[in-house]
Each structure stands twice: as structure tokens, then as C-alpha cells.
Image (cartoon, rainbow, N blue to C red; front, side):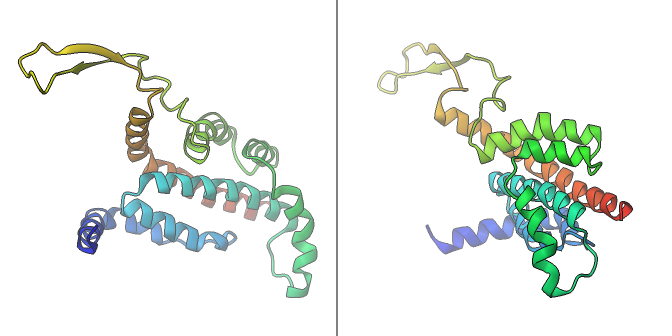
Length: 212
């Protein structure tokens, strides 16, 4: 493929989306400075409409956020001499670094780092649709509400006057149609999902500061 095709596409997407999404580059975290480069990378995906990549990277951001929230809640986040960093972060990192998303959500709620409503959204919607649907490549729940049978019509190119034949297709089990539906879902969901997690970072950061 010619380089010019990519350049044209990238330029069109940049011109189309930058004014709306450039505000996502304007942030300053007091605790979660580790997310700076990750959010820049993620927002570039949104600007270029790389929606499935954006959702998968937002999944990573969310899971890392919840683990870091637990680590900082236990270890603290004030100034610490460099020689004490291993001792400060060793135990909480070992404790929380490998837990699954469900456990992270439950522990963050128990420690009042997230609210009940946030817990419900994270556990019942994001964990199932976003994380399972994209990071685990399981489209089952995302496509659950699509009818088991969609009418389609088949024609004969050799005999265009022949009557079209109606057939029923289950889009939920055929890879080609699964991909089409997942692409559409990603297009609709990538930006609001990122904005939810981006907002959650600030909320958790404020809650950590209030507990100080």
C-alpha cells in the first residue's frame, strides 16, 4: 500500500477529530503520573479512529488504575528517599500486582476508592462488555441482543432475472458478521469508555488525597 494513502487518511482524521479530543492532552496528575504517556498514546488512537485499539488500551489503563490505587492507598505517595522505594512499594506491589479485575473492583470499593455506582458499572458492564469483548476476544455478551436470525437475500449473477432467495443468517456465530458488529460497537463505545476511565482517574486521585 502506498505511503500517500496512509498520510491522507491520517491527515483527514487529525483535521476531523483534533479540536474535539485535544482537550484530553491537557491534564496534570498529582499521583498517577505513570499514566501520562499511556493517555497520550490512547488519545492518538481516538483521534485516528483506531477504536478497537483504543478500547483495548483503555482496558489496560483501567486495570492498571485500580491496581495502582490499591498500591498507593497502602504504600502512600508522599516524598520518599530513593533508597527507601524498594521497601515502600515491595509488599503492596506483590500483594496487588497480579490480582484479577473483579478482585481489584471489590477491593477498591472496600477501601472507598470507588463508589457503589462506579463498582456496578465496572463489574457488570465494563468487565463483561469491554474487557471480555476486546481483551479476551469474547463477543458473546456484546452481540447478545442481536436476533438469532437475520434475513438476507441471495441472487444468481449468472441469471440476474432469477428470483432472490431469502435465507436466515445468525450474525452472532459467523466470524465475518461478528467482526462487522464488533467494529460498529467499538466505533460507538471507544470515546465514552475512555472518558469514563479518564474521569475515574481524577476521582480516585482525589479520594486518595482526601484519605491522606
